[in-house]
Image (cartoon, rainbow, N blue to C red; front, side, top):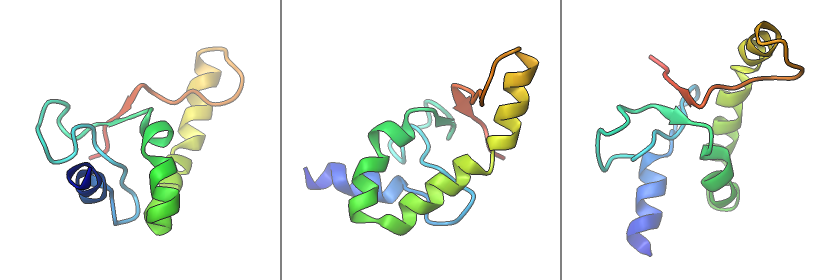
Length: 89
């Protein structure tokens, strides 16, 4: 259990403008890409244990909101359309 908690906290972006890459620091399978489910699976834990990191994750996603809205319009959809994965950098 402690190892899992360590992995989550270690992989969590502490700087603004980042998210948590899939696989964290355990491998390069997804090449550091951020996936849509970070907020679903990791965010609840971080809200209670590391609220500043959780806030940064939300800011990261929010910073892409206008692009997601634009993509939804391109696809003739309402709201915001976020990608399955995000490549940042």
